[in-house]
Amino acid sequence: MKAGIHPDYREVVFHDVTSDFKILTRSTLAGGAKETVKWEDGNEYPLVKIEISSASHPFYTGKHKVMDTSGRIDKFQRRYAR
Image (tube, rainbow, N blue to C red; front, side, top):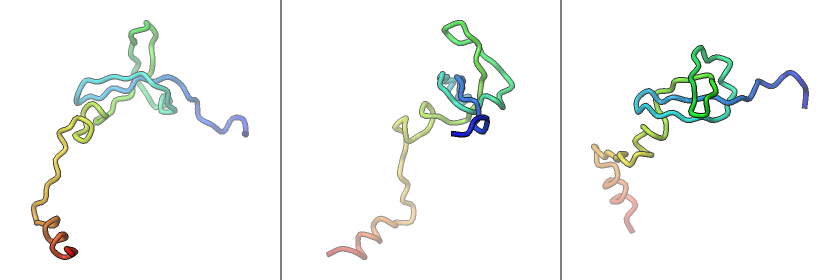
């Protein structure tokens, strides 16, 4: 691999602002983070705020609903019924 072409890969805290969920992980996004946060281990890490994560996304929280307003599923089943 070439030296000097890869971004720094360091520990970052992602904060889901809709559910107040925080996770410490490694990422290359730390270069653009303007804020830092003190984590549970006493160290300071760059903070990246996000609007949706697995803690707030409807698919992962179990609140995901399939809406079939135009009857597309019924139409499909009638068309391809055996």
